[in-house]
Length: 127
Image 1 (cartoon, helix red, strand yellow):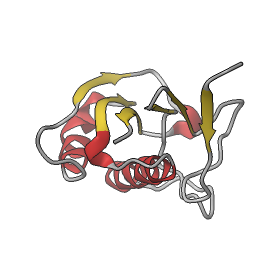
Image 2 (cartoon, helix red, strand yellow; image 1 turned 90 degrees about the vertical axis):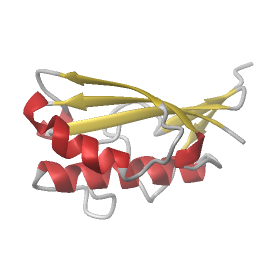
Image 3 (cartoon, one colour; image 1 turned 135 degrees about the vertical axis):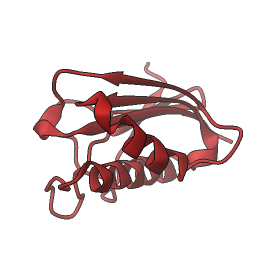
Image 4 (cartoon, helix red, strand yellow; image 1 turned 60 degrees about the horizontal axis):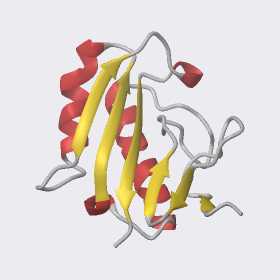
């Protein structure tokens, strides 16, 4: 018997493939990567700044459904289509957290789903 619980909320975009928005196992929440899709229209935000804000709102929505908030995040992974966008995304990302900040990685990738410019996934611990 599996001890993983899938998470689904209408406040974040529906999965665009065979995956859950997040999975909880043993009190740890593992989110799938969130991109800058508006959950109501399923359209991509235009600028990297707008995408970054939408990404973080989507992450917050998934965490909320899992019974967590941004303060429960212990690790974040940021994927960027262009590392030149790092400072824009970094400033926006920082506005969603307070100290102590989660551990984090940020990497440039060749391409993201739906031609997104930024994607974020997190790991959080339920309180």
